[in-house]
Every structure is written in structure tokens, then in C-alpha cells.
Image (cartoon, rainbow over all chains, first blue to last red; front, side):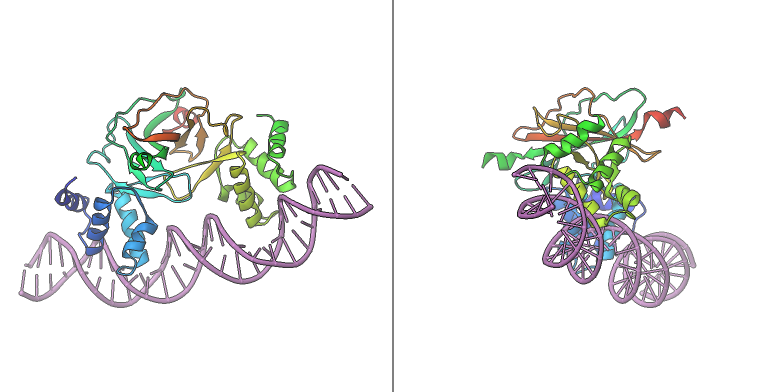
Length: 141
Length: 141
DNA sequence: ATCCTAAATGCAACTTTGTTGCAAATATAT
DNA sequence: ATATATTTGCAACAAAGTTGCATTTAGGAT
């Protein structure tokens, strides 16, 4: 997604275009991995209030600018949404890969989606898939 | 898994069989859904120290008695492990279902596993799949 | 360009969640 | 019954996130 369309995405949700929001958006755009609240606070904490950063992250998540990725540890990381993120077509699916060596979490969203069967009666609206292992870069070194 | 074999499972890991551990185990056995630390503390907090409960949960998780289930909220829930939980056969996989209506998280571990392709270079050792939607019971009412 | 208003931010205080160190208690092997 | 390593409780601490409120600011209306 382009820089411009990101700003537009923020505005299109009715949110105001503030310096803090632009900076948070920039950080997510430039990061090639998913980020936690802590990560963002470490980058911007001296310039902006902790509370405002938390609120920015929640607002972005509520408005489909970023999405939360569950991890098996007790923290959540966030990543930019794709264009079709909010519009749950058939099944809103998110693939992520947590690398045990470098500790990063990567989005694999653009990869093929295999239908996974559920037991009778269960109706899924979204699915979150988190792989854990060794990433491309780390497995080559 | 039977009550007896659960106690044995605890003992087989070299852990002592204390009242607190038995109670925590009982709670997990009787719960038909996954539980958070908070859930356990709410049930036992007046009888046992908060810290001991946290430690019991970590110990159980470290020893393969229970396993952590990532959620997209900022908390982790736990569930009893199946017999083969610790022995990562091919790919250690966990399927869970979060119901938006009742808020419970169910284990679907016994269901068929479809292989999901990963991009080149990525080597997965485990995969955690969290569905979100409406569960069997809730969709009937 | 200025004004107006709702929304966003900063600050202080607070809550919740989890951790650490250590002394007292207890499970289990002998 | 005793010894010892493990577990528990307690106190203090640390990290993560929330709430209320006063101030500031973005962006549309004038």
C-alpha cells in the first residue's frame, strides 16, 4: 500500500490526520515485521505521551488501519491491514510467522489460503494462523 | 484424559502433588473451555496466593500439562494438553475456536489437519490456528 | 483568514497483571 | 520419623494499560 493511500485510509475512517498518527503510520509502513505497543512507545515515547500512543494504536485497530496478531506470549503485535482487511469477503484470514531466532513476526497474508474444515455447527468469520519456526533469512545463515 | 492419569502426568514430570496443583488441575479438567490466569485467580484467589497461582500456571505450561493459546486480545488462555501434546510429531499444531457470543475458547485439536503451504525458506515447527466466529451451542439458539 | 467545535493530546493518578527475593511450610524419598 | 529439595505465602516491585479531565489542535464553516 502506498504512503498516500495510507493517509487517505486514515482520513476515510473519519480520523483526523495528526502528527502522532502520521508517525505511527510511518513506523508501521517502514517496518517489515509486526510491532508491539512497546515497540512503538520505545520509538516515540520521548516525543509523545505513552497514553496517546496506546490510544492511537487502539484507534487504528478499531478502524481497520492495523490489525492485532495473537502470539503465544502475553503480548499482542500489530501490523498494517491490507486493502481488503476490513471487508470480510468469505473468511477474513491472517497468516503470520514468528521466527524463533530473530524474534520477528512476518505477515504471510498474500499466500495461498487452504480451506480448513471445522466441526459441525461452528461458523468461522475469521481465522488467525501463527506459524512458529525459522524464517527465510535466519535459515540461510 | 482421566483424573488419575492427570495426577500421574503431573507426577511423571517430577512435580510434587500439592493441594493447589490439584485444584488448578481440577478446574482445567472440568472447564470445557480455555482459561486465563485471571479466571483461575478469580476461582482460587481467596484460598491461595496470587503469586503461587501464577507460578503453578507457568510450571504446568513449562511441563506440558497445559498449553498457552494466543488470542488477539492482550491476554493468553490455557488449556489441558492432549497426550501427544509435548511430543512434536511432524508439526505441533493447535486449533482453537473463539466464540464471539459466549466468549469461550474451545480446543479443536482432534480435527483433521490440512497442510498449509508456506513461502520458500520458511520452516515451521508449530502452528497455532485461532478461528473466530460463533460456536456450536451459540449458533443453535 | 478567522472562528468554532469536536476530536486528539498530555498529564496525573490509578488498576491490572505479572515478577522477584526470601523466609516458612510441606511433599516425598529414605 | 527425618532430611531435603520443592512449593507456598508475603511484601515489595515492575510493567502494561486505563480513566478523567483540562488544554490544544485539526479541519470544516463563516
